[in-house]
Amino acid sequence: MEKIIIEGGVPLKGEVSISGAKNAALPLLFATLLAPGVHRLCNVPALRDIDTAASLLQIMGAGVERDGDCFVINSDRVESLEAPYDLVRTMRASVLVLGPILARLGHARVSLPGGCAIGARPIDLHLKGLEAMGATISLDHGYVEARADRLRGARIYSDLPTVGGTENLMMAATLAQGTTWLENAACEPEILELANALIGMGAQIEGAGTDCIRIEGVEQLRPMDYRVMPDRIEAGTFMIAAAMTKGDVCIRGAVAECNEALISKLREAGVSIEQKGDLLRVRGPETIKSVNIRTRTYPGFPTDMQAQFMALMCLADGTSVISERVFENRFMHVCELQRLGARINIDGHSSTVTGVTQLLGAPVMATDLRASASLILAGLAADKTTEISRIYHLDRGYERIEEKLSALGARIKRVPA
Ligand code: EPZ
Image 1: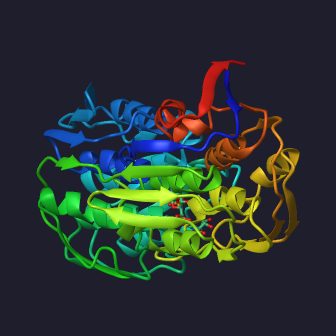
Image 2: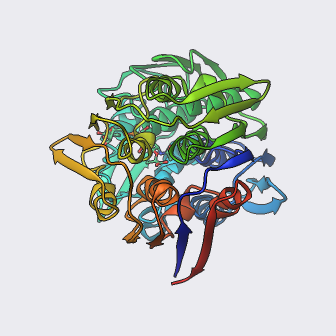
């Protein structure tokens, strides 16, 4: 076990490069199961979740090698159809093997993921879509058993625009017989990224990135050769780091057009954000204005930035209301921020944050991935010392974050707990 120690109060300055997107790389890795051959996926971040995905691919029979920031995956011998509980429970995104394996082998057996810190995280909409495509689905002692000689195209309306559900069904539909329409589909940039990679493999997909996606099934796909987009949530996290420390940071790979909701709210809070070529320059204001946010599916304010934005509002001049409308339990960071002197009241899906002039360093505990990030941000702005334990949560989604922050002048280090 390790912990991170921060001596707060240093304005961050300099340039930081954003790593490949975790939430794009994960479905892309599983998409390699759709086609035999040797696939190459580059700009893959070095994260615990990526390691888990690589282990799962190997269990399914694929050969996986890392070559710098690339993965070389040989999926000729994908024979195992089972995604075991001990892997799926550590990373919910493992359910994304369901669509590819069912489409390729006609049979898949995937552990139900169970819940996690931020919510129940059901996959009912994934299963409903696969049934609409002709799969027979049964539950067997904690596992989903799916069978289909060959999936057939269907018109599928999803009750919710689920990111993982859209990804699973889009992958499955690429090899189905006939045409599939995904209606009320998720529009996140990671969906468009997956579609672009699948099209490069020979899939016929139109409308990805909108709420209606049309997929014309084909007989066979060819291996992937793709480079992962930068991580918009890591980029947003560094924007807030600059804002909270009154810093001046240039972010390489910030992909502003994927962060419009966040950038709009940061500008409303008084943060200066300018695009300079492929750099985004972010400068923190003397006074942070209080701003209300409500998380939504894309292009709304991203739920994965809610905890980080709350940390910023803890230092705002005034009161802000933060509503979490995507997940049912995504305020685990509040108790820990209160230990740092934040004034926050939770009322159901909303939290009211009354800004304070100074956060006070203290020992705190990470509870989930984005909560960890909000504690790092608060520690950077707090006085004296902040110690963050259980940082294995952080390592799931941020590549070398303490090195990147140190390079910007932060006094931050990782030590054995
Ligand atoms: C993806 O999770 C992301 N993970 C999450 O990022 C992100 O928070 C989420 O999308 C929303 O943007 C990856 O991409 C690996 P959903 P996913 O299915 O696909 C409900 C992070 O911090 N729902 O869009 O699991 C569900 O309960 C992680 O990087 C159903 O009810 O999210 C939730 O309330 C956290 N039935 C809502 O939809 C279903 O069948 C959104 O879930 C599926 C989902």
